[in-house]
Image (tube, rainbow, N blue to C red):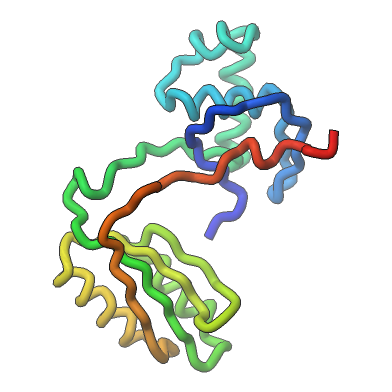
Length: 180
């Protein structure tokens, strides 16, 4: 999983943010956060409109955007509504790996599967948390049977989501310094 990507998302209360050092060694200043905020409001916003809103030149926006993309700080994607495009079975799968030394190997295999929308190593009762989007329940059963056959997968527990109420990224505003 790439921990140096900030995916563009919406939030409503954007305020002045200080420079934040990212895990990839890059830093984001107030203008960078403002650019990301503009994209969160409208992922297709033109550099010209963004420059006007932020009161900087189009060239400045272009340069900053290129830097943010090239250093892996942002990744601009089109997010679809899974239900509207035909995914009817959305589930959470807890994966128990034995022996524990196979966690990374199992995680890499699962990460390569196209149904996987989220994968993380966890603390607690199980080792890996997997969210998947499948066409239907038969597809989900085949997926679970497939990962259950991986070397090291000891057990899985599947929870089907009947209805998703919120599907969003975390609020970028949480990164602002609250001690000021």
